[in-house]
Length: 224
Picture 1: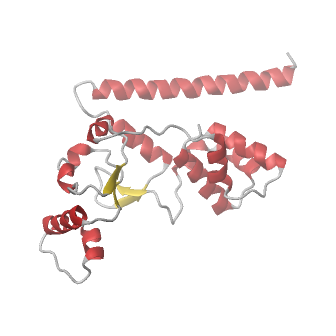
Picture 2: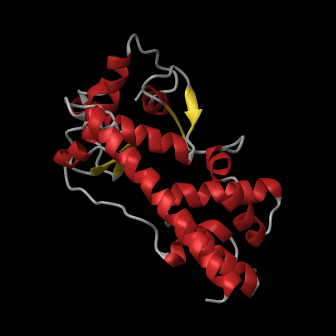
Picture 3: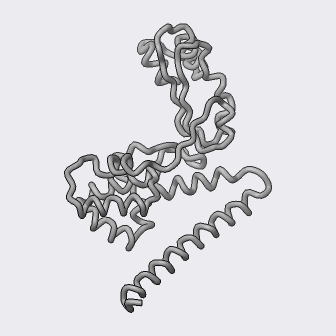
C-alpha cells in the first residue's frame, strides 16, 4: 500500500503505514474510473488478519486475491485454477513456434512430466534457456537429476516472496512451493499426521513410477 500511495502522491511523506493505507483507500473509494487492486500470495491469512481494512468502499474497481489457502474463498467469488491446458503449456514452455517435430514431441513429454503445472513449466523453460539445452536433452537431464533441476531458480526470477519463517525475499522453486503447501497444514492437532501421510503418498507415487519405468525397460529389453 505504501508503494501505491507513493505513486498517487510522490511528494507526500507518510508518518505511518496506516496513513498510506488510508490515502489509497480514500482515493480509490472516490475514483469514478476502473481500478484493480491485487493481493498476491495470501497463503497465510493469520499473518494478515486485517485484509478487509484494505478494501476500498468504491464500486468502480475490482480486487484480485491469489491464495492457496482454502479459507480465502470466503472473501468473495472464487475461481479455482488447475493445471494448464496443453496449448497454454506449450506456449509457456516454447515462447515461439519455430520447433521441429522431434522438439514438439519432447515439449509435450516435458509437460506430462511436470503435470502441466505453470510454475514447474516456467522453471523448466528458464533452466533450458540458461543452459541452452534442446528439449530432448532436457528430458534426459531431468530424469537423471530431478530434484536439483526443480530446485534451481534463475538469477532474474519473477516468483519471489517473503516466506513465513524468513526476513528477506527468496526465489520460489517448485520444491519451496511444495514446502509452503505443507506448511498450510500446520493448523490443528492433526497437522503432523497429515504432513506424514502426504509425504508417504508422494514417496509411494515415486516408487510406483520408478517400478513402472523399470517394467517398461524390462519389457523392451526382453521383448515380452
